[in-house]
Length: 171
Figure 1 (cartoon, rainbow, N blue to C red):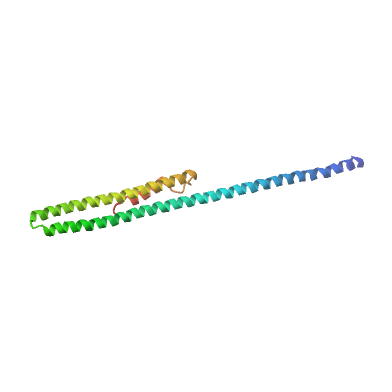
Figure 2: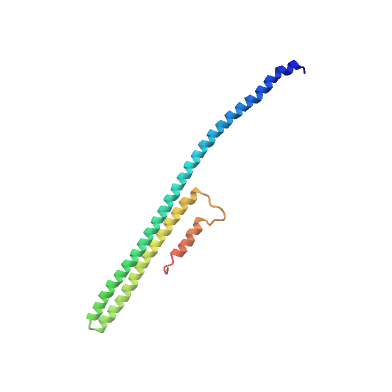
């Protein structure tokens, strides 16, 4: 190669890296725009997820409050009912002069007390079951959106464990 050829090629050799740099700068600018757009979408998605979690937590809190209110109301009504029935049976017992009437009154009182106890216990159990079903529904809705890891218990196991605890009428 002679000097004249080198002088002719030299401007082209200098322009090629410059052109490559310009192309790369255009690509980088486009990538920055894409990154900003993706970042904005990610932030919007995170905000949406936070709101959904907040709504779910709010619904669960309301469900727990309703369950607790129904249970405490049932206990209050049961107590008032028992007081009224005790007063009525005591009046009948005190006013009756015959032993046969007192015996019949005592049997009726035992039957009444057992029946009303069973009814109120049933209301409490149904209330707990509705709570379990609601929790299972909320957990199922949540778990269909996110895949649980192998180390976490499945929603079915959690519901079964909660159901076992809640359905115990002695608690």
